[in-house]
Length: 159
Image 1 (cartoon, rainbow, N blue to C red):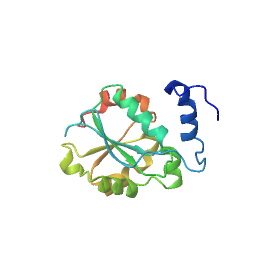
Image 2: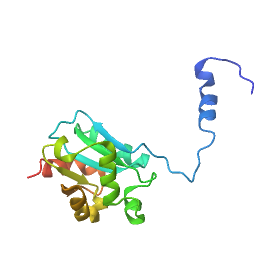
Image 3: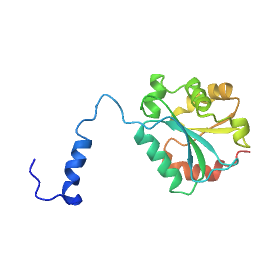
Image 4: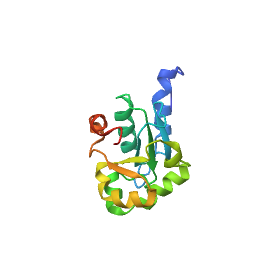
């Protein structure tokens, strides 16, 4: 490759190409599973979870943080699959959510004052099983993360 300049603006396209030359299309892009702080959560802040599919996680995180909602956000490792497909395919189950809370070292009974978890609307069918496994109150959130702020105004704090 012949370059006419070594200025950063000139070499940036080549560096980018070298970094992204191959992405395996069989492996979904994902974030590391675990508990993340959005804003400055306290013991009264809501606890939400989603999957570790990068597009899902970053959309949910952006919708929450851009509206100034301080919360705990758990990314459940579903091999990088979105919520609806993970529930349908068995990658997102109550056992997997419990396992993710345990792995993150997040005890709902001691970490927060309300012992409540908000599940994605697309995972509503897990509500009863989650209540049994987590020993917590489980509220079904909105189907779309863009509606979380409005949902929070009506449903938070839990009664």
